[in-house]
Length: 364
Image (cartoon, rainbow, N blue to C red; front, side, top):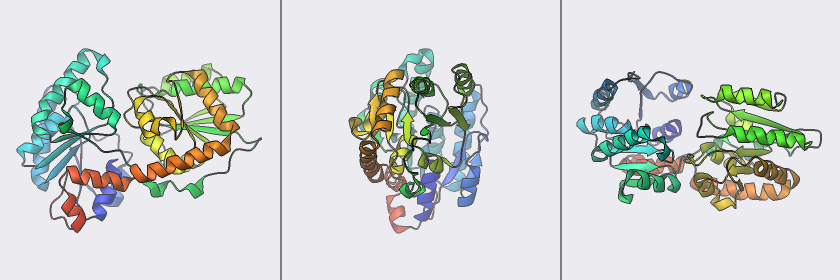
């Protein structure tokens, strides 16, 4: 998301500065280097109360150094201290990105998180939510007023997902290829997709499942694939830099996730690529897929329902293709990188700079 913003802002004459809390992971470093974006790594301690003071002090120093006029905090919760440092440095516009539905089931951990959000309120102009579903959850669970929030959908560089790169539908001797792109973390649900793959194999379907992403659940998923005898069917591809090409080669995009899902950027990538979609019927997916008119929604964690939906797409590719075409139209209209960059320019007070394409001062 930051990379897409930087690409557009630079083309409009806005000078972004990327401020990074920790040196790793750095998988996008070459992309930012190619854009010649200034990057500062704050090297924040990973434990202890002192880290909050360090964040405040180092953000203050960075904002003063670059004379920033706006700051967008991607960390949510910690944004309280980031925003404080920015305000002390005289930054006029401070907003924070909210990318997930609040998980209020986490007991004391959520109570601490809620306290951080409250601490950040005096220093933050807006909490920018990635969907209306997340906005509703933010207002409900953090007692935030609607005027303290805004909705800006995450944007995708549409030019990277050309429909002419799409492969022809699977033939009888070619596996029907199902893919999912997402972090291997608990708020996603690759496990249900893997179990659905077993059901489909037992039905005699010629399928292949490609799962892109990495994270804390990788070991568990590897064990599940081996235990279910799916090593020749399901592949964990890890982090990849050729995601557009992988999505273009899919017959179906399966987005199996949980109610904690905030938006689903990869879901939009599949829409822009014109790939038929089956997704979990949770708030974010329901919103992005217009209530199920742009893809098939199935109850979360329901293995049989997911397998049945995949079979439905496999058996009726023409209907699935028409639905995918409508999904692409919506994604290009509402979820483009350019639309996102314009919206963030507005909330950061950069609209005039974007229009004139001449920026004398940066935004961090």
